[in-house]
Amino acid sequence: EAGVAQSPRYKIIEKRQSVAFWCNPISGHATLYWYQQILGQGPKLLIQFQNNGVVDDSQLPKDRFSAERLKGVDSTLKIQPAKLEDSAVYLCASSLELAGLQETQYFGPGTRLLVL
Amino acid sequence: KQEVTQIPAALSVPEGENLVLNCSFTDSAIYNLQWFRQDPGKGLTSLLLIQSSQREQTSGRLNASLDKSSGRSTLYIAASQPGDSATYLCAVITSGSRLTFGEGTQLTVNP
Image (cartoon, rainbow over all chains, first blue to last red; front, top):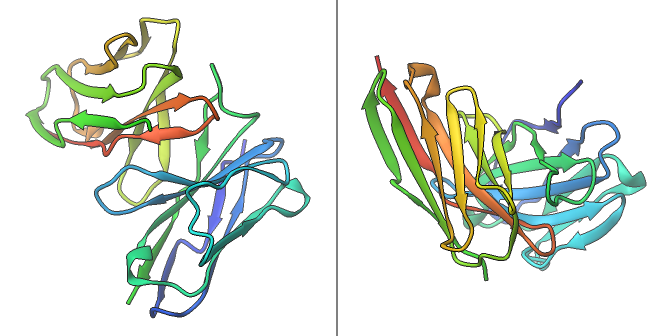
């Protein structure tokens, strides 16, 4: 079974530029998550999709971050414009359904973003 | 707001030692608690999942316990090996299906 795929693996941009990350979840997984992991911290949920609908985006900085999941499969996360504090690893995860009593999330390798 | 704390932040032990990693959370109304492993430059791998009604889960040399009422969990690693070197993250799910992570314990097992 193929895992969660993410691209690119690394990205270096200057502040105020735009950047986009792509995620392909495990086939058949209805729920998709984007996390931000700043160095030395645990991942923080940015947005959660159930199929192509948003379940939770309460921690997404909506003035500069946006995400979409067209057709309920692949997803893109965009930052426009980027700030220095956006330097982090962006992790995508998927699960069969909404995480609950037994459901676990499967994580991709992440995209490491450096904003100069 | 749920907060998860992990102690210690870093741990270095000689090979073969048994060790315990600690996790505490502020809101006991959780659905489950999970322990993840993160290797440098890689994503997270789920190690153990304990449902809120359970007290512990075991997988090989790993044993995780959960005391929901006191808001604590421990991950016990028996007979540690250099390949166990990684960052270990604790995470809980409360209502709304959001995973809240601790900051992790960076483990180094020396040969």
